[in-house]
Image (cartoon, rainbow, N blue to C red; front, side, top):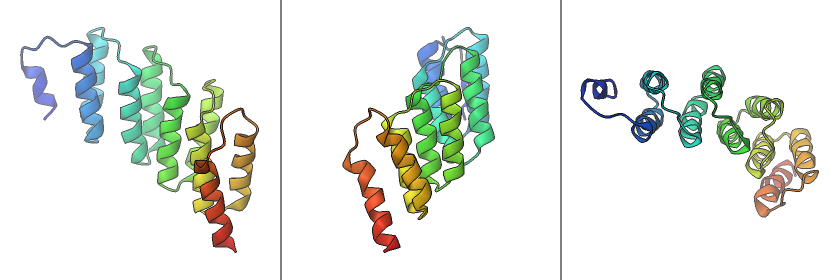
Length: 168
């Protein structure tokens, strides 16, 4: 349905391109998102971080790390640099799926791209390790979080408490 919009005589600007790509991403219609991304690029429209974050959230939710990384590269190529919030979204998505290896991969990639760690990143890693009943990984990620100047909240301690209860 997003493909038909191109047949109308619309004045397409950044707002419209962003809206179409966001809608396609939310509907997990990544072919349409790619088509409209390319049209925006050809039209010289600069897409924004909100578009990147929403598309990445939906792509990452599918568990396709290669597609997620391809979208990161697309946006980086047009000057939209992923930041800690962006990587936090991707890491959180991996954690919700229970995929610790993927969440750890994204954390390391964020570091290589110089995206500073955020509470969301580290809390997601502590949480997924705890849910997977992996005390070694949970402690490792908690130690990393404790070694930052980020605030330790109940959101951090709750999964660790649950892990301790579950392990006896």
